[in-house]
Image (cartoon, rainbow over all chains, first blue to last red):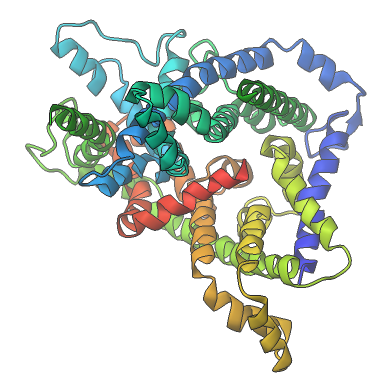
Length: 276
Length: 270
């Protein structure tokens, strides 16, 4: 019964993985024979200002996206974690952007962010504030995309936090209340430490999401202005698609995978050390 | 009482933030271009011009059929093979079982970016560029689906399977006639996750499909929006986006609970 899986894995899993390590050492446009260039791709990557730019952009994105994601998701989960009328309805509404394609969300937000006609700037000018160049200023474009990504994904993390909250034994709170701990103290000393595994999960999932950023800059900005929203995957796609540089694109993919490993490993270590 | 009021105020504010943009998008698709800057949700003058432009400029119906075909085929395959391997891993003992299990865990740790380009070159060399196989075959099996099936099958009482074996059922009959009918929850979860993942994907179709007749719906809508075909008409871009969102939103409206519970299992991946 497992044979089809083994076959599929060998062709579409193991072979591409092994071939990645061959491609890294070659120059290849798919059509002509491959050419061995040793460490040429890696040397090129080290001196490629754009890949470092993409890495910096990704850190910038993650730095804004992940904390806002954690705070907003935890806040709404805490609000929803009580006996309320319409609880499932609220949960369903917050979750809606999660199921909708990123293509739809990006096209929609492109209009919300538009300089002259966008709803956000219309709202700002209506109350007498100046317009904000959401996507046209190189300092603001990435934070704008991070804000949109938070809006799209936060519903999933609200649900994950709700699952986490419901797994905390009620007796802990009852004991703390008997000792006279305020609600805020209970949140700080019981809820947060008990949620540690969920926080780590949300941290890792949203960081990996940040490193996989593609649809949003592809549709919204094409990586601009001034490469300020160029993401690793968008750069990889451009190298493969526009320049047919398969060896170099595979090298970018390898480098990017390494970065994900390192960042996730560091996050694990830091969060686990905090638990003690 | 005040606290309760504040709580509801916060929740309702949140609901507006998540819902209003979708409602505005839907209404904008019926507005003439001049009305688009407004916050109102009921168009002063209803126009079908935006949808007319979408249907005449891009093969959106063809793209819808392509997406449906590709997503449905791959999802069926992921369910059938996921159940087969999951059953073998949880209920049969055979040489190499542990190896296969570890291979699956290993594949789930590999970031997709690492194998994206080699996989693309493989598709090109197989002569599969611009074909349905390119969209379907690489996604026909999923390690995560296998693990979900394996986990679920372990909860089925072994006595049930033993009894069936004694009655002379083959393992295939046990799987498809006894185990699968008991496995609706896990089939739904795997089905929703896989279908949504493929339906919404943009990067892979962009790489392997360049023939407009074979493009998937997200691809056609994205290219319509960034290419010149929409003539920079915002209403038409939003109309295309609305058509792309519609099938999933309709499904979500009916099965929102199942959707949410399924998506929450992605948490298990970490």
